[in-house]
Length: 107
Image (cartoon, rainbow, N blue to C red; front, side, top):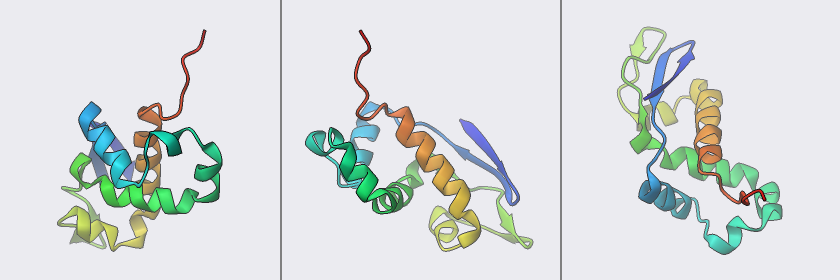
């Protein structure tokens, strides 16, 4: 498990395994053809970030997070709290980068 310290507690998350990663990319509306088109990502970066954030629930543990002493009880609850927009964006970006999407083998 990885951890990210926030003003609201420690967010724990993990990197998806191979089948989970493929499903995550599919949930984002991506396929092997669209993964090769970097212009698509640039034009729709907010759309893809939102889809990624909505899909990372199985990899995120919000246990112990609190806002003004009110406990966040679920990932869905956290999605409704704009206080988490930055941290979820950072975690989603890290997860996306960990998938090595669109990277080509260096010769």
